[in-house]
Length: 560
Image: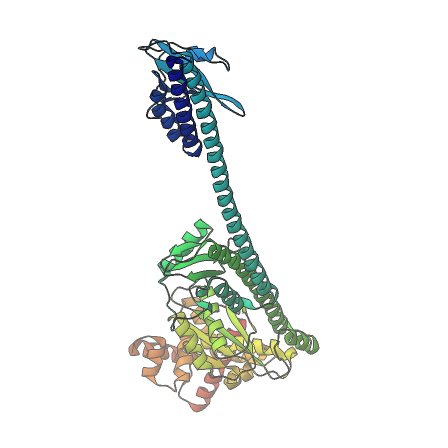
């Protein structure tokens, strides 16, 4: 063996040893860029050639030394397009020789290593270029497989985490559903809903009506007294909640409507000043709002049904019904009609002149004074059937206070031992109200049983004799008033009722004393009677009271 041949073999063995080392380094590398840099940096040690770069099947180009993405050299893409899997020469500007060696994986060629030189390489150089390309292809393929495996593992971990979160959310949603369903079917009411929502979220819970009144509280730290919002702010909050149709942040609260549209029945809030409520808490809040809506709708339905039944019962009691039927219907409503009752008629108006305002005012007073639940409206009046014997003037003043001022008249009928007698008590209460109007004694409480002669006159079944008596004593005055639009009968009535006192009579009639004297003189001239004569005085007073009773009897009930 010649010295030259021995030297060539030694160089080849050295290159193979270096190739083995670089192959191990590339195989251990997990970063594709690092592999490409190792191959490019080792190439000059194998001969007089270098790696210009790497052309991949996706059209990308990575430089040799840096391994970074860059524009592909001009004309190279067209030359590579005609190649299949073989090694082939390529022309690159500035180099005498270029070679494209395939980078292979199990799936096939995925790119090419581009080697260049200033001169034609030797056979050993070609062998080493192919060997470097083969090892680079294997290393890059392995790195890509490892990267794909790592990405798949990371995605699997993320998917498992999402699944665990979903399972946790589903379990909590099921717990929310089960807990609130138990509340709904066990009739625990609003207090039970508030307690359950507090247990599910750990946050205090408030249930309010649409006006902001507290109906139930769940958890600690219940405010006492409970704060009330201004009317305008409350209405604005309700509008926001209706527009959003979902929980809304309102300061320290997360609030949602319990609202079977279009009615607002209630408002449900989580007290959350630290803003710690999560998505599961919102689910619990919305679910609780649904349960609360059903509960409030059920309560409203019961209340409306009871109200209709009470109104039907009151109507039948006032128009006439048998005792047994009335007792049974009242008992079904939890009310006892087997004790004495009477009818009370309330007329009036507040400053707003709203009929509903009077109804609500009377309802609150009836509730506060525990007069019983049987009440209804009739011809513009409020009618109450009660077994109580309260102070009627105190009741009237309480209604006025609820109205915020205005006018209120109360008529009280006689006591009835049985329900079938209540129509009589109604007529008596209506008569008491009308007599107050006819007597011009202002607004007050009038008991029919204390009306004296008026009560006796009102009980006369045939009024023709009473009318004849009135015509005998007051006929000329009645006719004069009708012709002239005067008020002589009313003047005489007030004069006699006030015992002939000029000042009191003038004050009641709201006229000057001289006007009163003129009217009385005119009365004497028309009647030819001496008013102060005892017998005349008695008959005139009886006649004026009979006239007042007739006026009240002929008046349509409920006229304000």
